Amino acid sequence: MLTGKPDGGANGAVAGIDPEAAYYQAVEEYFVSRRGDPLFLSNAEWNLVRRWRLLGVPLRVVLRGIRDALDAHAHGWSRERRVASLSYCAREVDAARERWERALALGRDEGLDAAAALRGFATDLERARDLGPGARLLAVELAREMRERAEGGRLEEVSAWLAEREARLLEAISAEEGPERGKALEAEIDAGLERWRTRMPARVVAQLRRESVARRRLEAHGLPRLSLFHLEAGGGR
Image 1 (cartoon, rainbow, N blue to C red):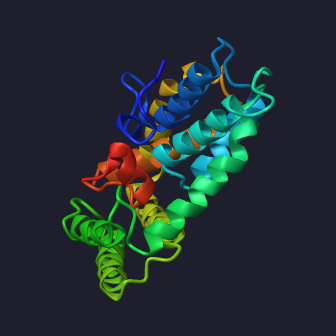
Image 2 (cartoon, rainbow, N blue to C red; image 1 turned 180 degrees about the vertical axis):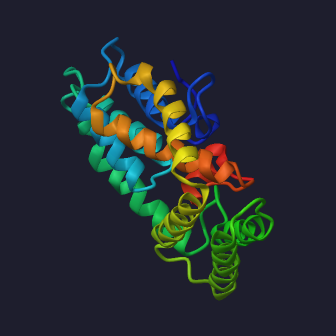
């Protein structure tokens, strides 16, 4: 079980776990270990973790919210009653996310320098290898935009802004790589996800699949995910 401090070594991928599934596995292991019984997550709970993932909430922030919720429960009037579901922690996770977003926008988050991350992504885009002509032009344009946003200090909602740029780049790369290469990549990823199909709801597995396709497609050109979330998770440069 994962028993480290939420603000410490739990940031990165869980050893031996697919990068896309590591976030989900770490949340499950931390919650189960803190709750103190061997029951694992239900489909509804996996979908709650998926919601946090789609919002781009870093693992350290999710674990901090779970810790806060369970610490409060341990000192409350209902402490003799077992916490039945991960949903009990949802309010505290959302509160931790809101604090993190405010700190990030103000440049006060100790775990991440968003402006430096944008400059780093710009350099990565400029150095990308083996891009087709359309994707190359787009990469240069995105690099310029990222440097301008970093220098201008416009860091509000930067995660959503990055996600839109990454989606455009992935679309351009996919269009130029051809359908056969894309199908081969997806078949390989499907085989690797097989072990999760019996543990997670179909929509969570589908999300893992999309994440894996994006990572592998960008890695083929020497690029990281253009995401503060993945940078925190150890998927950056």
